[in-house]
Every structure is written in C-alpha cells, then in structure tokens.
Length: 324
Image (tube, rainbow, N blue to C red; front, side, top):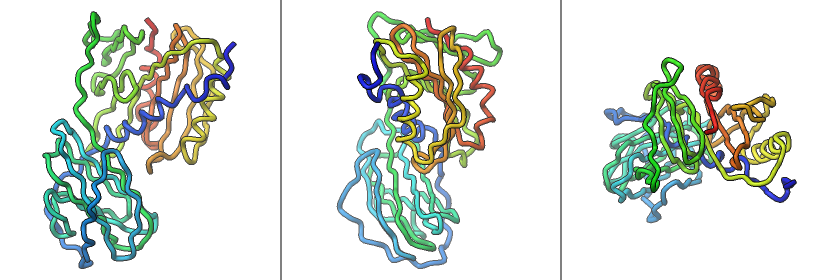
C-alpha cells in the first residue's frame, strides 16, 4: 500500500490552480460609457516606470482622496482579454479608470468601474495592442488594496498524433450534448447552452454556464481534471488528504457535506464546501474517484447565491460521467 505521506499534495492542487483561471475566464464585461463628473477634483499621481507582468497582483495603499496609478503593455496579438479587478477596504469607496495611450483621470478615460464600495472590475475583451494606463482613486476612505491584473490568450488547438477527437454528439437526455475524450478515458454530458473549453491550465475540459448579463462577474462552471495515479489508497484517506489541502488553500474554508457515493460503478467521494478566493465567496461541489490508474476530479464552482440555480443540471452532468 502507498501511504499518503509518500504522495503529498497530489489530489486537488490541479483543481485549485484551475479555479484561478476560471475566475478570469468567466468575468462579465465592463463596457465604455460616457464620462460623468466626479465630486472630488483629483490629484493625479505621476505614473511609475515599472510595468506589471501578466497575471500579477499589485498591492498598495491609498490615503483619503488620494490616487495610485501605473500602466501595463499589451504586445501579444493573441491577447483575447485584459482584466483589472480591484479589492479594497470594506469601509472605503475606491474607483478604477483605464485609458489607452495616456494617463486617465476621473473625467477622461476609456473604461471605468465606479460603485459605492472599493471592489471594482474592468474587463476588456480583444484589447488592441498598446499601453494601458490605470488609475485607482479614493472617492471616500483610505486603506490597503490589491489589484489583480490578468490576461487571457488565444489557446492553440490541441494536436494529438493518430487520435481524432470526436465532435459533440446528442445525449440521450434531451437538451444535453455528450463530450467524449478517448485520450483521458471518459465521457460526460453537458447542457447545450453551456460553453465547452478544452485544455485549460490542467483541466481536460471546462463547461461554463451562460452569461446572465454585464453584471454577471462570475459564471458558474463545471470542470474535469484527470491526473495519473499509481498505487492504492482508499477513498476515505484520499478525501481526508484533500480536505486538509483545501483548508490550507482557501480562507474561511467550511466543509458542508462529505458523502461516499458511486461514480460509474466505482467508489467515489462527494464533498461540498465554501471558502473565499481572490475576493470571491465561492461554493464548491467536488466528486473524486480513482479508476484505471487515473484520478478523476469533477468540480462545480458557484457563487453561493446561485449554487442551487444550476445544481440540477450539475447533478445530471455528474450522473452522466462514464470512464471509457
């Protein structure tokens, strides 16, 4: 028997990494809108010379009525999305502005995000090449902030020698299609109005719920991660290790449910939990099973208030999962 101590942190790390990407992929857009007058006349901070690299976070502090500014360059023509997400103090009101080619102000910008609190987001699909200057302005209050800067790039098609990936086929369940992957050895059904994306940062496939509007800043999704596994460990011990990892990865981790089940006739474990990640409160459902020397992890992530909205479809997807 292979002990858990001999195989540290192999269960859910690929899934945890994926959640970062899903948060980036599934954000709604903030579209340019005509500028409106701001009540406070700003004092613009000179633009620093440092350029922040993709998928990085900027941590800083703003005094009441103050600003913080910098810029990033988009030089890769394969960039498909540029996202700035600001997380600030709960008792302050910070606003976020972006302008291409020159420093923005609260009265002169190309994109803006203004709410009555300090969490803001600007999402720019298919951004033109150039220098994107951004400004954080304290409308009210002061404190520390974190600005997450994320880029998405065009993903080249997966090429597998001597292997043909079949197109989605109708599922026996009305309103669903069937996704099949012979290389990773599984198939699963998914709703026809969900978006399918393959090979996303360690996940074999991700199914993304429909966009509900421009204020839909997190799109619920289900993904399948497959990793090689050799040796033996029972599902109870595997789940204990997984829960320990999750409690260390997510702040405010809380385990809601833990139940043994069968997935495609094999022993499996279903866990439901909540936690905070990158400023989002998230509720997860995960099903783990080991078969044919592979660990299969099927994960559903949702904003807690929308968790039940898609739970029926998610259960249908999980029940349709087959190892082939």
